[in-house]
Length: 156
Image (cartoon, rainbow, N blue to C red; front, side, top):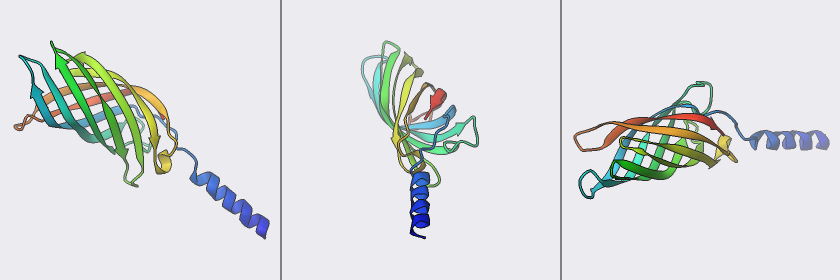
């Protein structure tokens, strides 16, 4: 009996610590809220947060419809920009996945690599990487940017 209980406990532990692995390819629709500091003509630095929902092309993946908050910085000078930051994804169960990102490109685009660094719950121990291409589509009346990012080659 003790042996069966020990095996059951070990099996439960092994199941609960299993890292969810998947792909995170799809579209991230975002609203960028923060502060844009105007420099000379056409040049600026934005600090703030890009937040929204991620729609995975694999609708059965746990990252599908996950919410993301991505604090970051975007410095545009001479029409060319550098961006970087982190992303905190949270699913309906409260489990989180963490990423870092950095991009370059001609405004209103920025793109480059991102890295999945860790997570909690089903994403505990997650690691991986991918690529993103962000596109600012419009600005609201408060000059908050609105757009989307396409994520490709993404695994975790």
